Length: 392
Image (tube, rainbow, N blue to C red; front, side, top):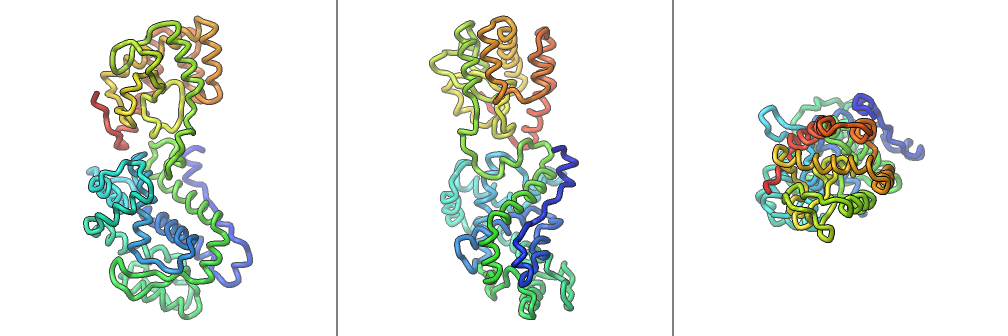
């Protein structure tokens, strides 16, 4: 979907009609309307998750801990900004700030489990207090703005947190049943109490509600991260089995049986018994296994490179040289051509690669130019998104 189409797309929350007689479903569907920050998505998602566990109340602290653990993977593994950055490079979003602070304090890896993350949140609770308190100032009652001013009592939605909390508790008591009301505790200990009728609806409609939240979250994040490809896949940990490198590895094995290939990073011949097929621009950014971004490299360096970017000026020419050797063999040897054609289904989806890069007749200079023209913008986007450069 083109970006403009994606931005204009609208989702409708589909809830069984039986609930419309007792609950303000229209107000619920407006809970994610026109958010200023990404908090609303993570707040509502955390509440739905807690309700799925048969909880009927939760403290601000518990909900925010859930939000931090849910945002962890997107922020750290894929460098997704939850609400963009200021002109001076400062991160806007307090949830993102909390994730980054915990990462620095804890030493956890970017793919840490939810249990590990929550254990570290408890360990560094005092250090995270400031970011958590910022999240309590607006999120809990701003999320209910879709229910405001739908009865005889009106309020300025920019009123203080105290006034908004009192307002929502008051209109709930007069007959407009809200998804939750507020307890009398202070700060992060304040509880929200889930309403029984809403608990039942949310549990019954869990799949539809979570799908709606996910869709709206992706729309928001994509608009704030326009250079990030495959963002829909970057909201939760992914199984490494999704990577489809079998046919590419067979292709490179056929090439290594034919000719010596120099390792891009070691400047030594690749040893067939100890190499991996890896991405030049990290998989965690491009989210695909396209042939034009894959290379054989010494397996001892693969974990060291991890999801960092190679130095472009130092290594791109070597990478392109190996790609060009592959290109010549594709068009010069029938056996290699057959191995290349086996990559069509999983590794040759980019139109520019099929129609320009790997077409027959390119000179070395033309091949290098086409590859650089298409790879450099992707590399630069990853760099701007915060991907670290690997210093070999």
